[in-house]
Structure formats: C-alpha cells, structure tokens
Length: 458
Image 1 (cartoon, rainbow, N blue to C red):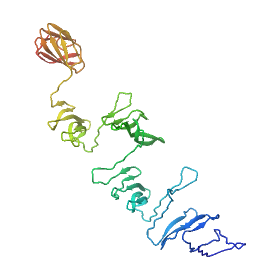
Image 2: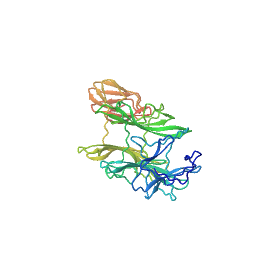
Image 3: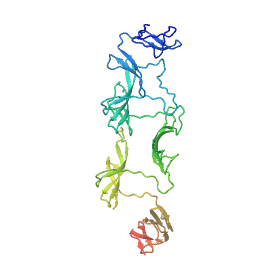
Image 4: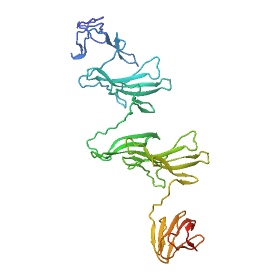
C-alpha cells in the first residue's frame, strides 16, 4: 500500500504514534483488496478497487446532538447505497439499551418545499426474473397526505407487481389513521381479495380460521365491541362446510358460545342472549333527506334459477315495507308480499293501517274437526264438519277474542241442535238439512252470528 501523511510524529523510541490525534491520512492509496487491521492484525475494513470509479462514500462526524453520516458522493446525480450480507445473512439493527423501545430505522425526507402526496420514504423489493433481469416485485411507501403545520396526515401504501410486472397507479393497500383500503385496478370481473389462510394439517370442526375484532377504549381499558370470524363446520374431504359469524357485546359481556348472526351454506341465524321478553330484531333502515309516500324502505327477495340456468336471476317471491304518509305525528306505513305467477311478479298481500288486502283466494288448510253425533264442537280448529245422525245435541265453549268458527252439517239423518255456552241474542242453533252452516265470531264474552245458510235460531 502507498500512504501519504500530511503530518507524521514519532514517539521517543522513533516509532510512529498511530493515534487519533497524530495520524492523518490524505489521499491514501490502497492496493486492490487492501485492508485496515486492528491492533491484533485482524482485518477491520477491506477496500475493493472498481475500474473507472466515480462514486464513493463520505463519512462525517457530528457535534453534540447531531448525527454522524455516511453519504454517497460522486459524478452521478442519483446514487444508491447498498448493504450486501454474505450468504443467507441479514442486515440487522441492534440495540442493547434497556427499556421498551428497541432499535429503529428512521427515514427523513428533508425537503424545503414539501407537498401533499410526496413519498416521504419507501422500501423496494427487487429480484431477478428468469431472464436474469433485475425486476421490481413490490414496494412499500409512506406518503404525506397533508403537510399543513398542525394538521399533518400520512399514509402507508403497498404496491405489489401484477401478473404482467406492472404496477397500478392507485396503491393496492393503503393505511391511514382512520381507514384501511384495498384497491385493485382491473377492468375484468374480479375485484380485490383479502384472504386468511389457516395452514394446519389437523383441521377440526369449529376451528377458527380467522377473526377480526372491533375494539375501542372505555375508561382506559380496551373493550371488544364486536368480532367477526370464520370457522370450520365440517373438514371432511369433499364435504367441507364452513360458517361465518358475528359476535357483539351485550350488557358489557361478549357471548362465549353463541353468535349474534351466523351464516352457513344452508341457513342464516340471528340470536340474542337475553332472559327478558324481547328477542332478536332485524332492522332495515333507509336514511333519506326527502322521504315520500310510496318509498320502499326495505325488503327481502327470494331469487333462484329458472330452467335456463346461469346466475340466479328470477325473483320468485319478495316482501317489503314502505311509506304511506310521512307527516310528522301521523306517519303511516305499508307492508306487502308478492310472488311470481305466470312469469310475472304479482302482489298477493297488502297490509296498511286501514285494511288487509288479498288478491288471491284465502284457503284455510287447517285440519277440520269431524264430529259424529252428539258431542262438543272444539274451539281449536277453524272448521267443524258435523254428522247429524239423528236427533243429536252439541255444545260449544267460549272462544278467544276475535276468533272465528265455521260449522256445517256434512251428513243428516235427524236434527242437530248446537247450544253454545254464550250466544248473543239466541240460545240454540239447529241444523235441519245437509249443507246448512253457520259462521260465528267471538266478541267480548259471546259468540256472535256472522252468517248462516239457513239454520233455525232460537
């Protein structure tokens, strides 16, 4: 090696005093792979010569409170700084200081004219492609959202390379103080996917694959107010089934063994853990600044395939509720049911505060009572077929408020006389021929005759 010293001092024995105050190296030249050794003769630094080198490293010390620096110098305008571990080694930042904060990596964009959307810092991941070309596969960055003094905002963004090696203009993943956004720029039919993968060789029923908790602080303590998660219902190969569920906190406690809502391949269940009289409520709400009569607030549709197949597109039935009047203090609503008939949606039931309208015949499919001879006409079925097989007597107990009862003479060989416990205006109803009938309704404490064809009233 060639050394050129601008000052060289000798000690009393005539030896060179190599210390921090006496040794000065100016434009020292080192042979290729020359090194600096420690006091034991072991290498500290090695210098590698590159032909026609124009870029180099400058080391600067610092005064109290400032930071020593390695800076890139040279003829090029933009110069990268490379740290190259050996083999499978890694670059490690190490701190042995006691305390809760360990080693850190800080990026400082010292700009005289900062602007919103400036990239403050970034990390890029490169690798070779199969052609040996250096390729950027992904990058993480910190972006300044606002640079206004006192109102600064930032975001962390992630750009992975696409299948063609290109990058979207919009970050695929962005986190700010109040939101996390996933974006995919694609004109096709597939959007962004967020995937949880539970890689286990022993899956079991009710294993939790992934979960998301929604927490806040109450009185200084963290409280989980809701949780969404996916579980395995059946891991059997070829018959796998899963469930997606939500839990919410109620009365300060999270249910441990039940879900507010559970979705499986064949059902949707809503559950409320409460010993009171109120069960689970599902609310469909429309927030409108200009509500109007006829607005449909919410509905449920039942959609399936037709004989053509493809995506389910046929609405076979539906129900919904809406507005009749929005006048404050006099609001009125409606509820209706429609079904597919002859290929067209047809309203079959409309309910309002004034009436109930049916557009199809009402069929009572409850099993009727068959009474042969004397006996009690029940109050549990809507219809009784009375076989008056001779001069027979029947009784009828009191019903419940608004209950209707239809009785007809299905067979006749003698008069059948019905004596209700309480019959308004009369005491008995006599059936004197086959086909005679009576329709009763219980009001207050009496059966009331709505109509008959024509029985003998006494």
